[in-house]
Each structure stands twice: as C-alpha cells, then as structure tokens.
Length: 119
Image (tube, rainbow, N blue to C red):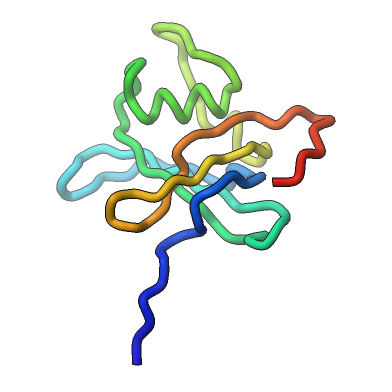
C-alpha cells in the first residue's frame, strides 16, 4: 500500500539556519543556485527546506529576492553578493506551496539577535 504525502515541510513561517548553498546546472533550466535551510525549533525542528533559483541576479529575479532577504536589505545595482557570508545565520523563512503541491522557501527575513519570537 502507498500513501500520498506532501513533499517538504508544510507551508508557514519557520526559524531556520542557512546550512549551505551551491551552484548547479539543471538539464532543462541551465545554471541554478540551490539554498538549503534547517528548521530550528517547533514541530519541524531539524527538517529542511530549500529553494532553487536562476543563477542570474536581476532586481526581479528569485535569486535577488533571496539575496536581499539574507542580507536583510535591498542590494544596489552592481553590488556583489557572496552567499558564504550568510551560511550558519538564523532567519525567518516563509515556506509556500507550489502548484505541484511541493513546498519551497519563498522569502527570508533576518532575525535580530534579541528576537525570541517562536515560529
């Protein structure tokens, strides 16, 4: 017998650490960037959430949106962004459901050092 289950953690807000990122190549979509987060606390403690983005960063791209969330501010034109600078930091991630029913990290907000908000 098989049971249909959701792919990834349920949609919602979570405290999470950026665990890693890596450039990769998708057979159909070309150059991509993969971001992986680990949930800290709550019912899904230790679970992972991720996001693939295009490797091109423009003001309207998903990579730009993720980069701004990690940096905690809007990045300027021609500003360099190195994801290594943010690995190991804690964030508030918003996980959304895709059309296929899977979930992915949709947006990221930095957590202030004194913020004890349980998500």
